[in-house]
Length: 303
Length: 266
Image (cartoon, rainbow over all chains, first blue to last red; front, top):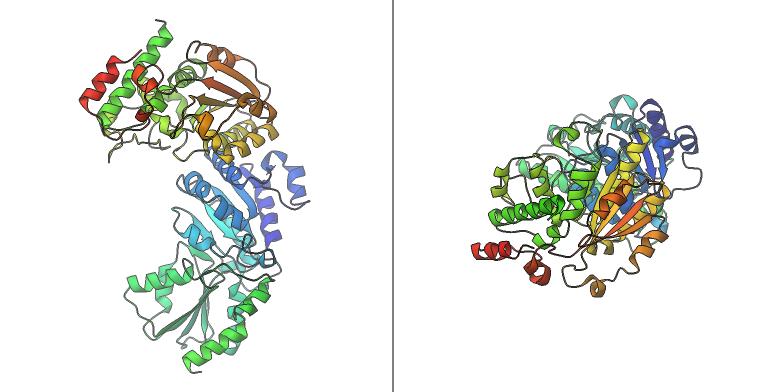
């Protein structure tokens, strides 16, 4: 997913001289072809996330379309004020490309995991928050971001995530609906790479899936099309409990006076993760594997 | 009195007028800026509203946003907006806020308020201008206290790395920050050495006794990013504001206060 996104930025930059890439201190060789072929559109500025975000804003004020890339937790937590004031308040064409969304950097500890990014960014005006599930979605999102007016944050998965989305359906702002049984009352609402886990669960359960790769703005219309008072809702997200899509789902339903039959939220808890481990290992530790989640739902729904 | 010092005095009276009408503001931080901004706007860059219709203009970025009264007074004198806005300073429906907002006040390049942003924004602009082959300069004014911010020094590294010979940072070194003297709150000396070691062409200028020297420095050919340490006084040009630290920010102001300050203008 990461490589696809970077290559797509490179392809877009070849077409549009106003497209600029800024990295902090990325791995050696990152986008070498970009650097060689378009040196005036490629910047590697050092470990200075706050500066890099404001610098991107300054360039965008002059008409550049800027992609900023480094580790998501630093771009969101460390530079939150720069993102809020210099990019979002000014509604500039800056795309923040955050490596290691969710638990991808689980072995490195809570400084590096981005499990609060949706919550931190949800409050910021103008910002679109995207969490693609796979490389297909990433490619389409980057292509669309190249002409989108306004700031965007993209949370990256770890790479190598199975391809489950189809190119023709992917559009910023539009959740994807996976219908297994039109008569089912069970609905999984998910985002990012939890889509793959949800699809695995759908092999065992009578359930449809609504995939919110656009976390913000939250598409309420589609939610209301698929939820009524007999729906069993389960939200699955690789994010802390508060401020992610679970929060959005609850708020939108209450505002629309819809009370579903039941609601269950699989999330990462309310504390930073106190264990080191690969993404899958932490999902196991938190009992968020498809098997464990299926068992919980079977009990709850009496299946 | 020279023409320039008369201009600066008039600007100080305008600042006082906005302060009086708005009933609040950071006056001493604006007074130390007057000669710096007046040099940039009226002499070196010659900015007028027509410049702002295109990218073909030099850029002045006020990073120490709390000094905005000086910027507002100058933009008014250059006909960027109407004087009726003075009454609405910091009020609903007005364009002049306690910190400036880009897009709201014509002629304001960046929104400012939280310190340590302007230098990086200006560096982004300077890079972009060079990329586009536009021979225009970017000047960012930061406060001395603002140089406590780490992002200032991240930006300094970047200006050097990108060989920005179209970028200048001017430091309003008025020696006083909110709590007290810069020298005790968070000392900056040896200040010029710091900028020099970051790869800047550095200058020090006495803006109290010899403010015209700034124009001469700005007119010099530039080969790398430039830092100009402007020695000023907080409240400069007013005997009361120069000597009384409690005037840093006021949110209540009486007619008597204004009369007192008018009488203390140097």
